[in-house]
Image 1 (cartoon, rainbow, N blue to C red):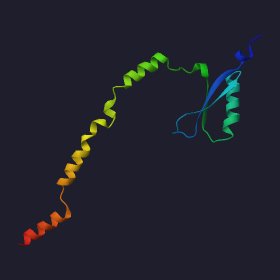
Image 2 (image 1 turned 30 degrees about the horizontal axis):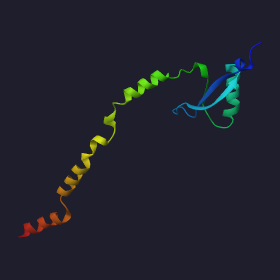
Image 3 (image 1 turned 180 degrees about the vertical axis):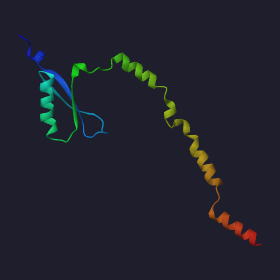
Length: 117
């Protein structure tokens, strides 16, 4: 006789609220097969919220990253310093220089007086 833990499998439930909306993970459930998992997802979820689509996926069928893949990914992403603003610290000083060099109202008005003379 099969073990009860072998009988039930974990399924992940995803839903979408509109045609342009992304699929969102909602919850996990235990079910003996995919048909029962779909019925349970519909019963527990669709009567609470309006959705246009539900996906039920066996958790074992979802591929996860291995620890080696995660480590490799973080190493690849470490060279993205150009995305931080650390390299643009000099801009604040440049803006100050430009603002000081800009003409103010008093200076412009003084030109009018020069032309009258």
